Length: 410
Image (cartoon, rainbow, N blue to C red):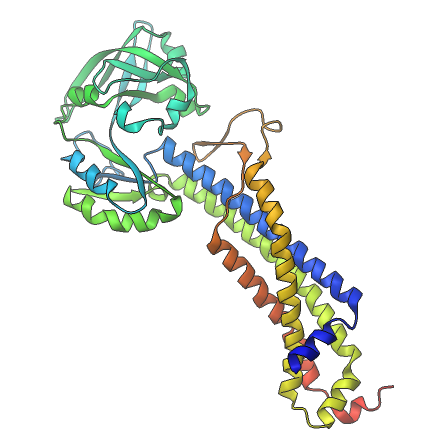
């Protein structure tokens, strides 16, 4: 009976109720759209970070993150890679070698970070391979050919097919050198990468630094979703420990980027909380006005024996109806918004001509939405709780009505 009464009471003032429902639906539309875009932006940024770095998570020798040294290696990496590939959520894994040194020609020399990869195992995952502007990609793990950045090529005055000398230290700490040819030149838009990084075949680099056939610096692990990073790290840590290594998430490998994302999320939370509070104020006004207009009615109900608790329940049920209808309408209007934002997206390339870099990562200026069920559950649940909270004071006020005093109201 109270549920039916609450429904009828809700539509006594249709205009006020409709305006309140529109406000709820609009607030839901704003917050869901903002959440869709934010999740898409963070997802694109993390995916780019995984491709520019060493995957969604990285397995490397203990202590390498704090003090990188060529002598800190993972042994029997092929067996480790096979274990990783059998793990849940893992999409791909590949071994890599990282070394620091110099690159030089007859013209000049410069510091260099040398990344050894297996072209066959990596495919197109490394971010650099998407940005080769001259020449072509590596084809073999053992060739004496490398990829260098556009700024490095300019400084060393080297072109495709020309030779340069790379100098580094081997596993024992001795200075070693190798003569290589430039097969390709890349331009990522990140000056630090284009000026500093050299990509070399892993087997060739393995020979220079004195690694054994199964040794590598790290294993880059790519997941089917960045949301599973923490789970994958926990699951792969024992396997990494068996090889005297450790599993690190992208947040640990790229703390600057993780801090940027956390700061941006905090700003989003404040914005969404502000929208929620505005909607809550509108609902409070609607329910409170309805209660104030019916004080005499509540007095009569209490006088004929209805308990204060049931009067309060009636007001809360009206609030529940407002919440259910408003959230339903909000969800329905959010569906086409999500479809548009996920399929077409927001193209910012015309507004920002240059590549945008956050935490050393180049991110796509064509932003598309992503749907995360857990975020939607939290958003709608939080909104519904706030709507119910808006009805608490009017319900309390109605329950405290004094029949004798309300009878004086004309």
